[in-house]
Length: 123
Image (cartoon, rainbow, N blue to C red; front, top):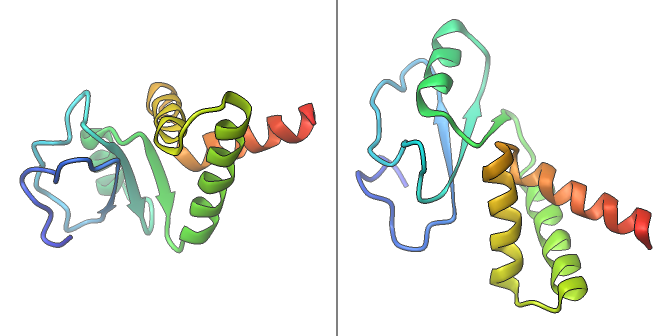
């Protein structure tokens, strides 16, 4: 959505937010405990952009250009692994991945990749 809303819509899980030299305003949902995982998207690293990253404290940073299908594919496979191994529903599997990503301040794609790698090792 553009411009970014002052309040996130209900049931928002992940927000991808472009951080660039023109990004100057704070959003109320950039807090210590955001209601969704915040993924900052950056084109290049400048002192201004790094300062903005520090200000918004995202749970993950993705560089442009990025491959959104790689992130989505890993997430889907990781959810499938969790659903099968823990005998849980899709939303519960997603919440597990999201919680681990937020607690460890890791990109959700890396957590998903780790689940996939662990599954391959244990198979």
